Length: 314
Figure 1 (spheres, one colour):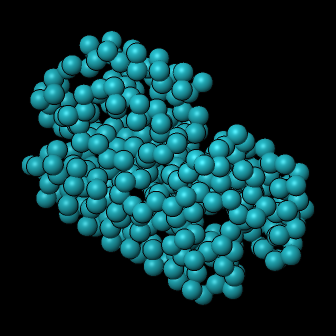
Figure 2 (figure 1 turned 120 degrees about the vertical axis):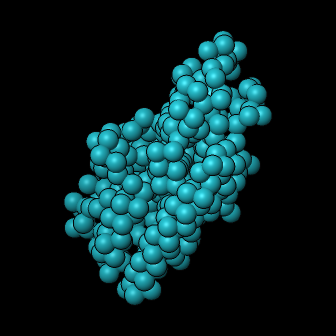
């Protein structure tokens, strides 16, 4: 379905472009660069760097599931009109690559977040269900590159460089904001590392998808989960649930995690069967509309993860 939709979007791009030829000199937007991003991490990193010096738009609606996101003609127009465009890359963003290939991007600074870090393949750990119909020859890279503060710093640097090239007048401000923000990411990194260094255990369990591969690798954590991070599956088999229940019991795991915007049913079942406490570990992939409207940030979400991780590793 998504492949069909992307084809339709590309065919209609020439029509959209007719409406996308507005002034690129900034006269219609008070001289501020138009920056378009696909998801929340890119959105928040960018606003921390640029503040109100840019016009910032996020394509993925708050509360929506990115793995089933389908672009609209309006989204294409926004990308075409942007001076900076930031997206993740990977399987979820195949539609982006197709659209970019079909348009003139010579005047757009494009950041693919997966190109700013050392990517790793998604892995199938013991007890985890593989995606149905996935080819064994096909390499799937984990797209959730922002989950480790170290990677977040690299992404922030790439965004800062692009913004400075787009708006030289505000470059000093952007770089100063980026330095201050990077210092906060360093502090967050130290907090997570201290928890792991003093932990009794190094294993976390998710009754959900697992979008924390970069986070786990950064801090030397092992994990068990129902599905890999980019899986579109939400209903596990009885064997998978039984495996996770047995693992929690055998290793006396005190916490079963779920991710944001999840139905939480699997975590509820495992918690009820084992007595493990159900907690949210926020992957910062997207936020609810309420949180978005209140201005929640990546750092706030990650700082809320700190005591939850401590509890899980005690």
